Length: 127
Image 1: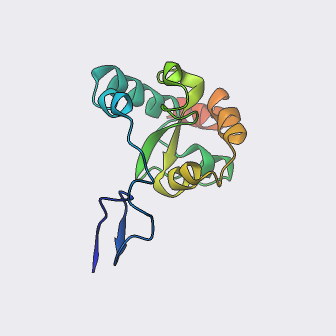
Image 2 (image 1 turned 90 degrees about the vertical axis):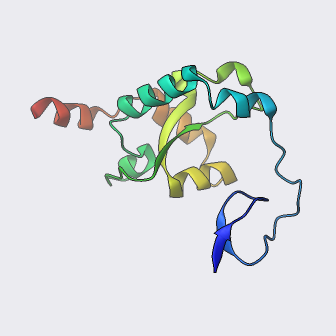
């Protein structure tokens, strides 16, 4: 049976293969994620990205489920970039996990975040 893992914070079967303590929590980052400033900024980024995963969109796929806003440069690496629009991007769960693992280059994410999804903007204006 699958369960929520308190070690890696994912859902999987059996014991976690990740050693305990491998993911170090950042108290400032954890506090920040519950602030109104972050909630407002995350909502603005979702709106900017038309509630679509930007990586999927770059591949020509519209994905608007299981979305979250990702910090390209992590909070523990540069806390000052926590609210910078160019450091934030909307990702689906699959691409968010890939980005966290480093399977998607930060440079690619930064390029996507700094350029608006024009074709969706045109589509939304037609409605």
